Image 1 (cartoon, one colour):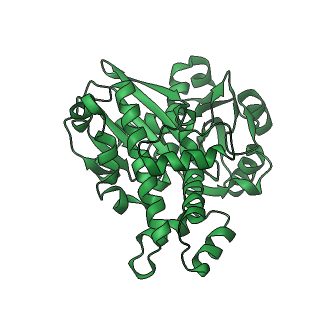
Image 2: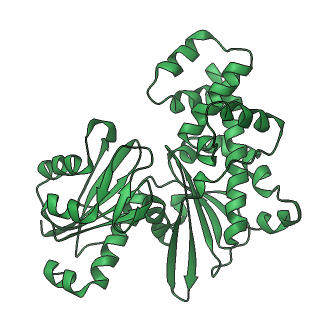
Length: 342
C-alpha cells in the first residue's frame, strides 16, 4: 500500500479519519471512516481501531481538532480529551504527529474548493487578494480567516465563537436574559451552534405556547435533538412552529456574527459557512433571514453587502484540509521528508 499520511477531522461529536498516500493526490484518500467520539476514552484508542481495520504503513499524522492548539497540545472544547503531539506519535509508533485547530483545517481547504463544493447565499464581488472569513457552527462554533501574501495563503485560527453574544432585537435580548439565569457568560457558541440550537429551542419552549407533546418528548429524549428540531422546522408535513422559530432565530444570530467576523477581518475575498448545520439547514439559510442580519451593519451595510457568502457543501473539507496541512509539514521538514521517502 506504500507509506501513508493519517489525517483526521476531530469534532466534538464525531471524528473522521483517512489514509492518504504520500505520493498521491491530497484530495484522494485510500480509505476513510467516521467514529462517534463518545464511545472512545481518547483519540489513540480510536486511531488504533481504525488502523487495525485498515492495515497500512503510517509515518505521519495530522489532525484538525475542535479546540485551541497551544505548543502542540489541545484540550478539546466539547469533549473530555487532551491530545499532545509527542505523546500521540509515541503511542501510535509513527515518526511525527501534528495538530491544527479544526477551523484552520477547514480554512486550509477553502482555496482548493470548486464550484460544486459550494452553495452561494450572496454572489457579491470577490477581491481575489482580500481576506477570507470562515465561520462553522457544529457542536460548537468555530471561526478562522485567511490572508494572502502573493501566491501564498496564510491561515489564522480563532476562538471568536466564545466572544460575548450581542443580541440585535427584543426576542434575542430576552434569550440572553434567559441564558444569564443559568450562566454568568453567554457566548455566540451558546446560541449559534448545535449547543445553541438546543438552548434557543428550550427558551422558546418554556416561554411560548407548547407544541404537540409527542414532538417535544422525542426531542428532549434525543442525545442530539438538532436533526429533529431541523426536521420540525423544514418538514412541511409535520411543521413545528417552535422549531421553525428556533431555526429562524439561529439563522439571524449566525448572520449577525458572520457579518461581525467579516467586518473585523475585512473579508472582501468572501465569507464561507462550514460545518454540518449550514448544510442541513440550507433551505432556511436561503430564505433571507441570514443575509438580512449579515448586511445590517449601519454605515458598513453597503460594504458587507458586496462580500460573497458561500455555504461549503463538501463534508470532507476539514479532513482534506488536515491532509493538506500534513503534506505541507512534511514538505517543509527535510528530515521528516527523507525519513518517509516523500
